[in-house]
Structures are given as C-alpha cells and as structure tokens.
Length: 219
Length: 302
Image 1: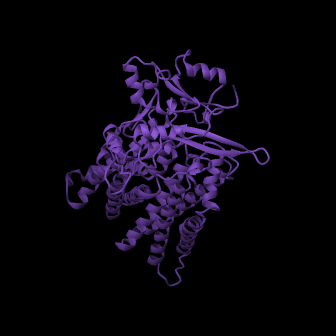
Image 2: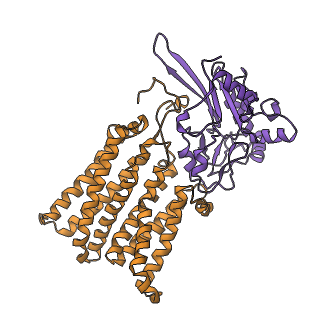
C-alpha cells in the first residue's frame, strides 16, 4: 500500500503564496480558513540577515497525535497514510486542534457566509457548498487533496506524476518546489529526492513521523 | 500578531479558553468542585452536600461540557474511544458518577430504600470515591495528555488537579455545613482542608519552578503567568485570593481567634476565596498554554 507524502524545496520556493490560493480555490475554503500556509521569518542580523519562507500544511503524520486524541474516531488515518476528518462524526471538541504540534487544523466556528454580505452566494460559492459541504462546529484540515488522488487512481493515473491525480498546491507551484508521491516506494520521485537531498521533516523530535519533508541548503 | 508571523513565536492555545472555549474552562471547574464536594461530604455522610456536589459535578459540569462542543447533538460520540482519548474516559467517568450518585442518594429521599444498606456500605462508597477522584483530576489529566503544550505535560499537573479538587471540595463542604447549620462536621473536615491546601500550594510552586528548568515553551508559559500579561490574575487571583487569604483565615481558625467576626463568617470568606482562586488558577493555566514555534526566528524573543 502507498503512503503519500510531499517534499517542499525551500531553496527554490519564492514565497508567492500560489499554493495557498490554489488550496483555497480547490476546497472552496471560507474566509480565514487555510489548509496550506506560508510562514515567513528572519534569522541573523544586519549585515547578513536571512529570510525564511516555509510553506506548511498538515503533515499527515504516520503517528498522528490528532488521531490518537479524537474521542469520537472522527479523525482517522486512511490506508494510504492520509489523515482525514469525517465531518459527520466530528463533535467539535477541538482535542485534535490542541494535540497537533504543527497547528494545522481549524475549527469552523461559523457557517460559511457569502463573500458579499446580503447579496447571496456567488455561483462559485454555490458549487463549493455542494462539493465541500464544510460543517459548522467541526474541525477542518488539509486532506492532501484526497479526492483528486482517489479519482486519479481510479482512472489509472499516478499521483505526483499526473496533474489530475496530484494535490492542487503541488501542480500550482510555479517553481516546481513541491513534489508529491509514494514514500513507501523506494523508486518514487519523493523517495529518491529525500535520499538525494537529505530532506528533513519539521520538528522530528515530536515523534509523529510527518509525511511532509523539506529540502534546504542541499542540491 | 500579524498573520504572516503565525507560528514564528510561542503561539498561545486559544481553542480551550477563548470564545466558546470558556465553557470548557467552566466545565472542568464544575466537575472538579462538584466531585470534590461529593467526596468530602460522602466521607462524613453529609448527604445534603452530596446532592449539591452531584448537581454541580454531573448536571452543571456535564451540561456545560456538552454545550462547549461544536456539535452538541453528537455528544454521545465522545464515549466511543475510552482506550485512546482522555476526554472519552472523562465523559464516561462523569456518566458513571451521575448514575452512581443517583443510586446512592435515592434512599436519602425515600426512594429504593431496600438498597440503602448496599449503597451506604463501604464497597459502594469506595467505588464512588474512586469515581470522584477520577472526576476531580479529569480536567488536569485531559490537559496533561497533550505533549504539544509542554507546560501542561509537567508530572505534577494531575497532582495539582487532585489537591485543588479536594481543597475546593472541602471548602464547599464547610460552606454548606454553615448554611445547613451542621457544625458537627466542621472540626473533622478542617484537617483535610489544611493538608490539601498545603499540598496544593507545594505542587503549584513546584510546577512553576520546574517549568523554568523545562523546555523553552514551558518556560514561556510560566513567564506569561509570572511576569507577563497574566501576572495580575496570577498574583491577585491565585496567590492573594486563592492562597494568602485562605492561609491567614486557616491560621485564625486554628488559633480560635475570630476578632469578633464569628467562625461561620471566616469559613464563608475562606470558601469563597478558595473557589475564586481555583477558578482563576484554571484560567491562568489554560490561558498560558503555549506551543513551540514551527520556525525559530530571532525577530522575536521568548
């Protein structure tokens, strides 16, 4: 069985926020809700400061803290390693939100409101409501575009290689800084990149074994 | 904090203390003091106290727990994973406590009197006692399970929950003793109150001292309470109202010196201070919980 994972090359990432926008578009996310974010920070001091740009998303950890603490079994790990939330089962206790050391979950406090108050939903928002009926009072998070991956696999496509079977943030990256593939396949694009570039996960000391890796400083 | 600085410094947890999260703070408080009151009252067969404890812990605590949820109509799902989730275990304990409490107190109202010898026996009391203790530590134990917030993972965290619950329970019991004029119990509860207050103060001191020797995030949490924006709540609410006044009153009671105020008034003052201090301390603990930053940056210090 596959274990889907992602690699983000920080050397080539230009911090354009395209992944953030593509993700919001793909999932019809309401205002203030992000599955994918770009963190910007600085280290060092004048005359040699360095700017850090870290795109972050749910790490779909192998040993996910959010799955462990969910009292309702609403957060679970699929066989392919993607951690998802079942909106029909989530009771909104927010234990998973507290448990995630990467802070990649959002509690949907209000029902999705129209973008133009008082003018009703736009056609785009209506489609979103049908495709992704995000439920008020539940927790939402990145699902590695599982619907794209599943649909692609059904059509015989390869996630990470074929655009239709690959997460939106990966295919929208203008500098090809994001890579998606099977971590359990030693010959996959991501496995080869991890070995070649000494890719690392964020905070491996948390012991959750993230499926998102980063490349920095190695070529 | 600007959006692009998100997770660049020690980020405070907000979900369990802001907006609807305030309900969880109250839910933990009510279950703790309710179970504490029930435990102390049951030890001395003070059944009026047990009734109030049951209402506070099971009804008020339970209802506020449910109201806190984003989808209260699915609350029953919270009992599905007791093997994994501390919240699940806590909810099951509250349910068992509710049921056991009804069984135990029904004979005092004239119902199921045939069972009275069984429910007032020590084996049943022991079961209820264990349930009370589990309910008292429920809040702190739930928080203790989240390694993402290092301040809450201190080993003394459950002990603070236990001692504060017994302390608050003893004070509520004494308050009801005064209200219902059953002064005979007062002398027996007093040693429990003093010992639990001393233990509570010791574990609280230890928590803050050990946090400074612990991880950077735990230290940042402790600093938020001691010298940060929660300092006034900590020193005013927790230290002065929650510890200093009760200690002073306990000394006066111990020395049998009431300066003409009256023993009952002293007991009421101490109980109200104890409950206020406990409530504020829970707020400070929840509010000062901080995550480690995802990316370290020297733009921010601490």
